[in-house]
Length: 76
Image 1: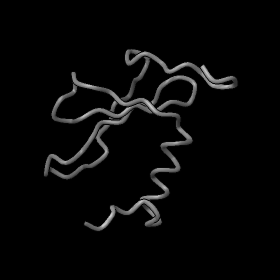
Image 2 (image 1 turned 60 degrees about the horizontal axis):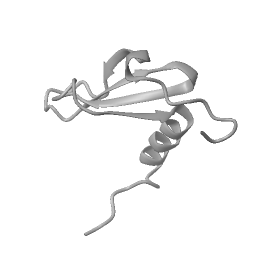
Image 3 (image 1 turned 30 degrees about the vertical axis):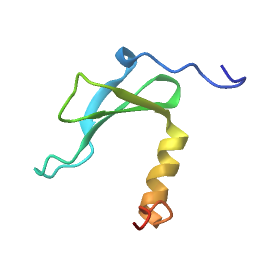
Image 4 (image 1 turned 90 degrees about the vertical axis):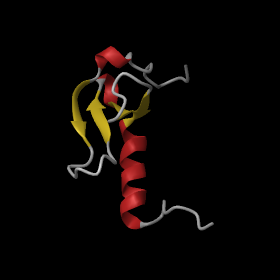
């Protein structure tokens, strides 16, 4: 573990799972808050599948980047 960081919480420590998108097109993920400022993401079509856990600050920066266009998809 890097000094000054909190350990990655177990998946069972996350609660309050909620949809990231309220549309009915199926394109959404579930998001939950965890201890120590962590956020978890999982596929809405496979709730028992893999869970990505990231620090809240990284999540906030990613959302901001999407909102302001600095994290736009690369052109093919």
